[in-house]
Length: 112
Length: 500
Ligand SMILES: Cc1cc2nc3c(=O)[nH]c(=O)nc-3n(C[C@H](O)[C@H](O)[C@H](O)COP(=O)(O)OP(=O)(O)OC[C@H]3O[C@@H](n4cnc5c(N)ncnc54)[C@H](O)[C@@H]3O)c2cc1C
Image 1 (cartoon, rainbow over the protein chains, first blue to last red):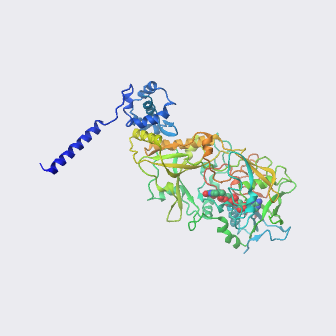
Image 2 (spheres, rainbow over the protein chains, first blue to last red):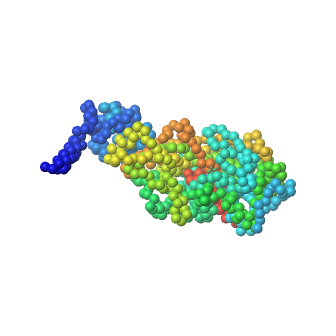
Image 3 (cartoon, chains in turn blue, green):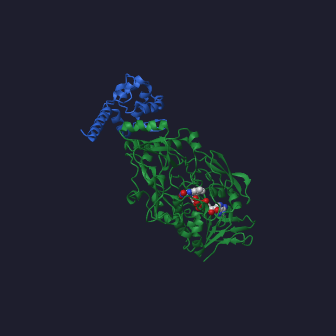
């Protein structure tokens, strides 16, 4: 095998490994498990959600009740966030106008 | 051919007897005089100042204030030929239909006629203001190649348009005095009289007619004008002052039998940085950011306005929200944007942020008012006090408009909005004002509710009219000058008929 072939093969393997790592979230941050992971796993990036959620949590119920309320709606966070502005389901968190479910999921992340 | 005359050089106690005396040579007075130039009537245009700024003339505008902090009374206007257009911004936009409507649950809103009544005058007003062809909200069809308009979901806010009075050689917009002095001189029947301060309106003993105007100069000269008709066009503060101070026959002042003169003062509050607009994946079109010149001479700028249906449905007042500067997001703001964009399934890694400003409409308030003080100016006229107010409702209603904008951005997945202020002290801290003086001689068909009738004639006085934005009973959010000039042209048509 030529030197060039070895390098190309190595690059291909690395690329595949990178893709797999991304796909299976090998490098994703792991959080201690909580009773709300079915909900929290829908948040793509939990760190900023926790920061934002600190401001949202004061005006919302505690984690258990909030989770129960969120589970009542069978739609995913993405589906709800996309639909709510059209349904006038809007919240204001520290001045930010957001879909209601974004405020609620973030508040849950901040409390979990 | 007439020429400018100087009241200081006329023989003392000269009596002038024009058909029409116009008090004030700002855009209202000048537009009125020019519109009547060919009417066959002799017109005397009495202007307090000269052709340039003079400090001692300007001092005549000094007054005091109470209530909410506001611009000094001698700071927000100029007292010489051309009036405040000597330093205006040239922002121009017609009032909307809804601005003329009586609004349910909104006391004092509405004009005694619909917008149709002044629409025929808009084209000429636009031309006097030199704001180019009439485009405004047709701009969506005219403008291309300047980037797309803000993507908003369906709802109450839309992109509306300002036009601008033309800048000359990159200089300021149309100064009515400079621009039209040659036309005033050319008109055979117009006599512009400079340095002529009207200090009193004298009424007949039955208070039914104006019999004379007292005129004084700062050099000590005194003249008398005995006009058939008089139009006050001295600006919304000075119109009220003249009427209140002329109290020898009717002690409350001219046209003030119902204690309305000087009340309902208004301006457009212009709070800074009212919100931060974040766009997820695209910068904003320069149309919102800068004034964009079109090849046909119009200068345009996009602005965000509540739709009339939204205003009606939610009892919201007018507002015009502008994109001001690029803004930076702090850590918390970034967290808000990332969390929201991810939930919406949108990439916000190239998000851009902008601060927003706005011009708001105030609700009419009879307690926001001008009153006479005992202190007098150099001509012996009582000075004014302005009691300024702004209600929490004004902020709350505008917040509703901003929330709707935020909702529509989310619905379109194009961006999101942060509203800066919640508390009254925060709003007041950020407050600037438009210098758009309005409302002090409000128009209403019922003399108990207005100082002038639908023709701008002072109720109960046969030959006294008022021009300018002091007659606006409600204000809209549009800048006033185009609209007050249109209204003045309508008054000119009325005067042509009654004076003939
Ligand atoms: C800083 C600033 C920026 C502005 N920007 C804009 C803008 O972008 N768009 C807009 O639409 N509007 C703007 N305006 C408002 C605009 O200038 C006014 O709407 C307009 O000038 C009002 O016209 P007027 O003729 O009624 O009154 P004025 O312009 O006030 O003119 C009144 C005239 O009467 C004279 N006068 C006063 N008292 C007497 C007296 N006793 N006897 C004889 N003469 C008297 C004065 O000297 C003056 O010439 C701005 C104003 C300011 C101050």
